[in-house]
Length: 279
Image (cartoon, rainbow, N blue to C red; front, side):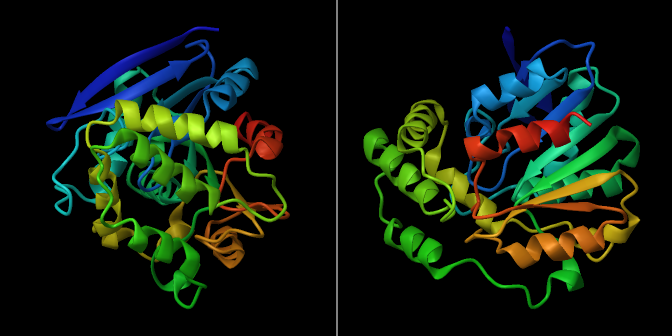
């Protein structure tokens, strides 16, 4: 199965994208979370989904991978812009409607797309994600071990690609759930590829400073697309209650619980993800 790389130019930015599978099949747009490029949608998972009869597109959000980056600490865009980027990618590929599969922040952006551009969304799969606005108040925060790890890495020399790869791999290890065996080799390989190709590794942390999307706060009940929420019970970034509340917020959404899974796309769960994404 062949893949194709394309640079999508829209609103003055460049977005690096890659597609897999037959263009005549229903489209699935994979939307990654904060501070992570499209590489964290493993290529083998993309190919498995394409083999199941879907036309798969993954892409680098702004400030990640080979897409347009901004100076560290100064993101020149909002969450609404990222939602519009997703639609621009669909348009560039000639896709009228797609099943949006969003991981973490990608799931939140997918919700904005479903509210802002409902005609472009056939379905939603929201993995390890959460809600906007009042429904999210009081939900458990990110685990302190994640914050401590990234505070300790504040002085990292990002020009040292080897050290940067080790740092990223270490961060992803912390996301693993107690019920999943961390695939050290796979994580290290993706981190090394990430470090080698990224325009500006330090810029990916701009995602922590993002604003916008306030217009959509508390409006999850207006989402019309059929939705499935997938969430691990051992998620240290957006703990399991986030998924429970999200499934209640989106009308008719089904909650699929991954026992022992963390904030990850573990190979043990790929079959579940593919089966849901091909509906």
